[in-house]
Image 1: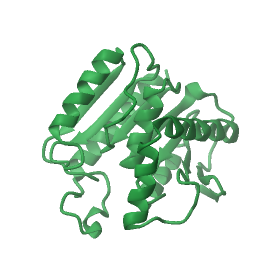
Image 2: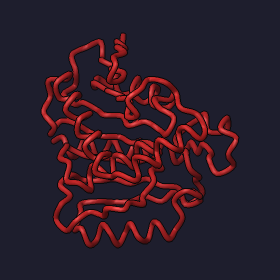
Image 3: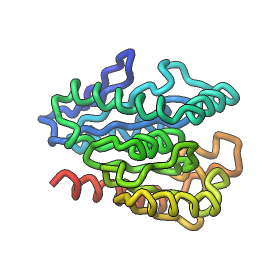
Length: 229
């Protein structure tokens, strides 16, 4: 049975059996550690992995509406602080799992996807990073040669928060940075396409897309397996 351990820093999910040799850092959506993130952590633990979902905002309290938007805006205004925050979370995971950064995979969702990408932009070094419907815009683009970790970006073709022009700018940024990256655009998917609770948000731009969700997960697991060889 999976062990769930709440701590001030975040939630730990540990497999019942001996860990499979990888540790996953799950970066949450704008409000905090949602049920979507908890389900992902439980799924990874069932596969034998250690999973850690940190409280990126520094609180376990669920932020709603304008408060969540303000918290995300503050991070966007200081990308270097966001990168340091994710780096600190990697350090916590390394200490708590006993595994080196080379055995760590980062999975980021929505705001957490942006945080994961910012960590990659800043040269953060782990085995692999995947962003799901993460925001792409930044005020500090990656410098040439700075990115050291393979990056997977999964986005929705109908995502109103990540319009085609922003996708194009991201392409140009990654090319200039000479990054090891790939992007998958799910043409009929909206924002929050991995979250089966998206319909409850009351936002027509946020919709669950089970096919895109399943494919994006499989792609992330394939990247993890490839990077951990």
